[in-house]
Every structure is written in structure tokens, then in C-alpha cells.
Length: 168
Image (cartoon, rainbow, N blue to C red; front, side):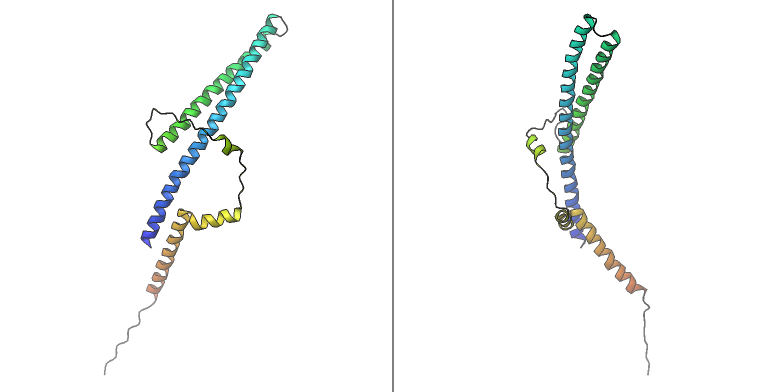
């Protein structure tokens, strides 16, 4: 029983590593999407700043209004810088998990179709599959069986020994 539990424990560790890599990959994809949004917002604000410059020179807006638009652009530039840092950080996590060279940057491609697919989950089937195939659950079940055997053994050990000695 110990060997089977060790096998399931090893499988659980492997599953954890795969889950961590999968999570890191999709975190990287999320950070790429976030960066794309920040770049689009910066480009829009740069256009607004150009318009605000024209309006300010034509005395259609106040210096305060122009300063507000300029401040918004600087804010979005800072947010874009943070998005770049998040992208590099999430790439570094995946680089570490995949044991790549530390100076590499991972850029996933081909993920867009996956983002548009609806995910259909049958909770009952998912629960049953987890109960049958998840290594950590199987390991826990074996540990429970082992505990029950040990409990029964201890229970037997608590019973009094009855020794009869007869002499003639």
C-alpha cells in the first residue's frame, strides 16, 4: 500500500508542476492582453493631447484643462510601464518553471482561438473524474485506508489477552 501511495504522491507532484506551468502560461497571456489595452489607451490619449494642444493654442480650453489631459497621458504611460514589468515578471515565472535560460523572454502565440471557445463543464462528471483520477485524492484515499487498518490493529491490541493454563 505504501508503494501505491508513493506513486500517487509522485503523480500529484507532477500534476502540480503541470498546473503551475499552465497557470503561468495563462497569466502571461493575461499580461500580454493587459499590455495591449494599455498601449491602445496611450495611443488614444496621445491623440487627445494633440487635440488639446490645438485647442489650447486657439484658446478654446484653459491651461488647467490641458494640464489634466497631459496628466492623464503620463498616468497611462506609467500604467503601461507597469504592464511591461508584469509581462516580464510573468515570463520569468514561466522561464523558471520550464528551466529555460534566465535571459530568455517567453511570448506565447496562437492562444487567441482558445480564448473564444466556450467552456462546457458538467460538474457531476468533473467531480467523478477528479475522484477517480486526481493523484492527491487517490493518495488521500490510500492514506485513509492505511489509517483504518492501523485503527483496527490498535483496536485489536486493546482487547485483553486471555491465557488459560490447565494442569492435571
